[in-house]
Image 1 (cartoon, rainbow, N blue to C red):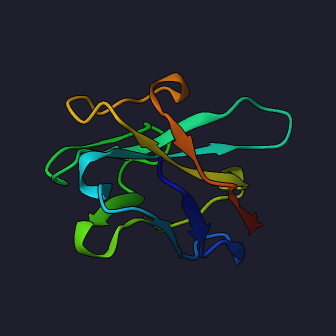
Image 2 (cartoon, rainbow, N blue to C red; image 1 turned 60 degrees about the horizontal axis):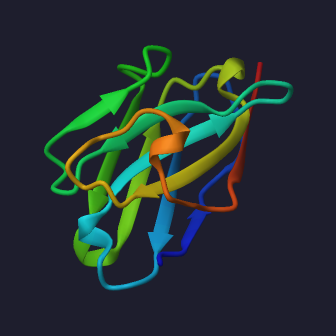
Length: 125
């Protein structure tokens, strides 16, 4: 079992930056593939980014590629999402997720076993 707590959300103007953090409980964080997803009002939860257990492999949704960067610090049980050049369409609740399938970097919600409560990101135009 792992518990995830996101932080770092807020209100930012278009073109600005935010850094989300996700702190995980437990001593086996380094065994989990980690991902970020988001849900905008009236829309389904969608994939944003994911990272392998070592941090050596990352995947991004096309909509955020080149603007967002996912990273992790296993020694701190934390995964990050650096978001630059934010757009109003990035407005959503952002969720951190952990997958026990350490051999695969999943890009769909069903591949993840644990979820945080989410943090709101609002980008004004």
